[in-house]
Structure formats: C-alpha cells, structure tokens
Image (cartoon, rainbow, N blue to C red; front, side, top):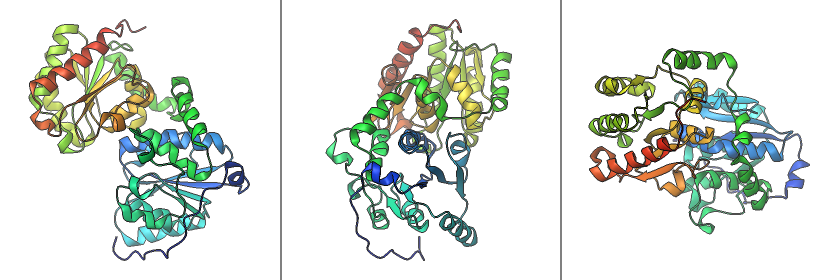
Length: 373
C-alpha cells in the first residue's frame, strides 16, 4: 500500500437514527468486501438487511477480480465494481469512477488495510467500518468516520454473519431490528430470492444431474479440496470417507473441486469410482447453486462452497481447522448440520477426526430420505 497518503484525522461521529439516514435520500451505498468466497457469502445477509431497511437505496459492491463471479448473482445490486491486478492506471480509473458516483455510504465489511483504503478512496460522505478490536488490521480504522454502536467483544461468541449485520448499527439501525431480520432470514423462503440464477444458467447442471441419474437428495457432495493448501485433507482420508460411506449407505457421491484443484479432484475420483462416484464438471457459482440445492448434504473443509450450501439451506458437515465453529461454522442450517473440529493441521488428520466426520455425515444421510421426492 505504499504511495497511499494517510487521511487526516477525522472525528468518528455517532451514528444517526435510521429515520435521519432516510432523509439523506437518495442513498447510494458502496459495499466493500473484496474476498474471499466464504466471506462474501457471510456478507449477503447484511446486504439483504440493508436493502430491507432502505429499499430505495442504490447498492454497489467493490470486489477483487475472480470473486465477482459470485457477487454477480447477488440480488438487488445496481453495479459490481471489479478491482483487477496491481496496475496503477487501472486503480486510478477505478478511483475516479467511484468518486463520480458520489456515494453516501461506503461500508467496509472486510476490515483490512486494502479494503479500508478503497472505502476512503471512494470519497463517500460516511465511511463505516468495524471497531479497532474487531479489525483484522487495526490501522484500517484510520480510514473510517463511522463505527457500529456495538462490537463483538460486547457479545460473546458471535458468528461472523451476526457481526457483519450488526455493523449496520453504524447507519442508525437498532440491534434488535437487525437480530429480528436475521431471525426472519432463518426461513429458507426469505433467503430464496437473495441469489438470482437465470433459468438458462441452471440448464447445464440440471441436464448433467439427469444424465447421471441423480435425483434431488439421492446423492451427497464431497468438496474434496480447498484453495488454501492448509485446509486440504489427506488424499487417503478423503478416499476412506467415500468408500466407507458408500459401503454403509449405497448413496452416490459427487466429487467437487475448484478450478485450481482439478488434478487433485480427478485423482480422488479415479480411486473411488467403484463407490458410485461422479466428478462434477467445472461450474460457475450460479450453476453450483443448482447442484447444492439438490444434494442431501455436503462434506468438506471450511470453504466458500460449504458456506454457500449453508446459505441455500443444504445441510453441511464442515471440518473446522483454522476458525472456531461458533464463528465460521454453519449458521442457517445449524440445527441439521455439523461442525467437526479437526485440529489446526488437517493434513495430519487422525482416526478420531476421520471417525467424527464420518459419523456426522452418516447422521445427516440416514435422516434424509433418498427417494428424490
């Protein structure tokens, strides 16, 4: 971030009541959440609550290139700005474009120096970010002039979805109203319209499922890899899980992996093909929603795909290695999902962890009819 001038110290002002914010209409909001996929999913409920309380607001989103593929299917956004590469000229042009929008609010849901700088670069009148104690990089706080009225140290064991939503108290929303909105979003029907997948986008995965003879809820999904090497499970453990679960349930499995994990995903699939296993083709996020909605359950590490499944209402069995379950585990499906602590070195997964994952997966599968109704 060299070459970025530090802003002059500006007082952090107490948030105005929601009614006062409404009088600033038309409200233009820039959401700043640049990555990663799971964290973007965790921000969607806060944006939905923002839309609910300020239905007339124009809401844009600033995201890093690559992650815009997920942001593009979020309903209610006016525009998605993409930050690509480190080319100074591109950044300068993006800065000019953001400033031309004359945003009322820029909200930094990330809490990093880079996201805070872009919040400030937008020249929004109000720049809202977390309290210093809640920031990943405390220096980011220099770039804000609004704070929430509540922070996670005042509330024990907050999930990151709740933390993001409560950031909106800095816009004058009452904590009780935000909690009620999250309660409402617990209903899958309330979340159904928050992601928009054009019918044409869903045709390819539906055709693939039909060709594979996979009916809704007749199969489970195994997210076999992760973008972060530190989150990847040993190949032998993955193989053992698939074979053992098939032996006990005879349920087919779809092996899933990201664009950077194709070789690993194929290697696993080739060792478990006899267990009625299929390897999913490369799909975009909109197409993935079709697969995840049809699955009985998805197993895998703490990754964006599992958080998306939780958001869609599909049970998940999530192996937690680098974040506590209360903070990053399943949120919307927690009554039917499982977060299994596997230690901070998943590449050394022992038999106890393996057994815990299998047992949790079996509990979900045995409670889910496989008739495909």
